[in-house]
Image (tube, rainbow, N blue to C red; front, side):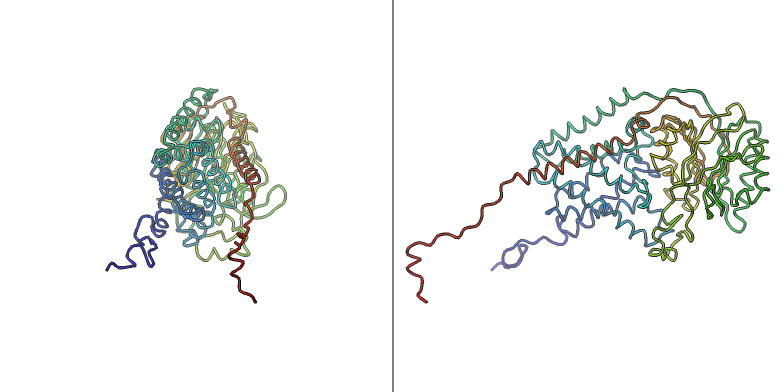
Length: 542
């Protein structure tokens, strides 16, 4: 006699083996791995082409989930895997807390997993599969929009940013920003998912891939390339790794010595990295005088960055990250205080509740103070006197709206001062530098990314990299001959129209679904069947 339980379970019910690919256990392991896959498209691996296929395994899991709840769970697990992979370099600072943060932020992908199943699950019609090519990428874009809020970590690891060295993608960014590039990348992944898994709609997948290629080609031929309007020579000073006692003073001395080597090279502006000066220049006139002397020696203004306790124009006291322009006669009076701070690195959100994070990692012991507005600075004198540039500090180069605002206010060059010295040897420094290519392409203005320890890089107005930059841990001062550009990109003119369009599409879809549910006829009430004469006669008498 055959075992009545067997692989069909007790009473003949089929049960899945724990090690079956369709079992919840395997799917729970596969989802984070599938979500983490696209992290390899970013620097340092820089497998940019992987971004166009990396979401397919994750989407296949979600579309084959047995229930909508399971699809949402796999969306969340995939988001957790993606967030850990993209931010793994934070582990030395946050330790186990990074898993908690990744789990919280990963929940943003739960609705997206459910959406993938709704649009692509089962055997979708041609119309539903076609609609998915727009709806699924729009859902992904909403996730990127929400997590771009500074309090949730900011726009680090936006999928479109992985295409920073692909010229057609950079041209696309000039039209719709990094958002349009993300939308295209997810649309290709969606089309490929349809192509490989939905037999009745494979033509839709093939057409979707072709349409994405045609879109890129159309933008390439239509979007105007930046029109050159002159050149400027900007030097980047990178003092390299300086540790141990007296590191702040020795870093200043290293930057000072490197800057002197620029004498006679006809430089228009010298840029030092973030936290290159450790004392308030108003409280240390001796440091201000030394920098002014360097300005006279080099014949150019010097943009330094002060990380110290000071007071701003409004009388607020605290620790500010402040960009300060120094000319031959001392500070010019043009300053910019960093506005968007790094969560946990420069302040702790809800410190009263989360202050314990300082005990498990290198979280900020004291919150930095925020600046109140962006500013445009101008070179004090020289052949390029009057050149206007917009300063950003570190984390701020990740925000598309900040560079767009600077260019709308008249900036001819974007300058970001950064310090990633806490994350040397990780993927963070090259990934941070790569963001400059996106900001340059979006705005049609060159961007300088200057750091203390590397990677320092300069990008032209089309997002193209100028020279090789200065690699990690190098100690150097290099001059970059940078083309300027005139004109206004579509992104600077129209802003985040791609995000607004995606939001409108999802809102319209929700309204349509609500209207259809209202029009659906209500189910007929359950009426007990009438008794027959025989049944009535058989009823016992009470």
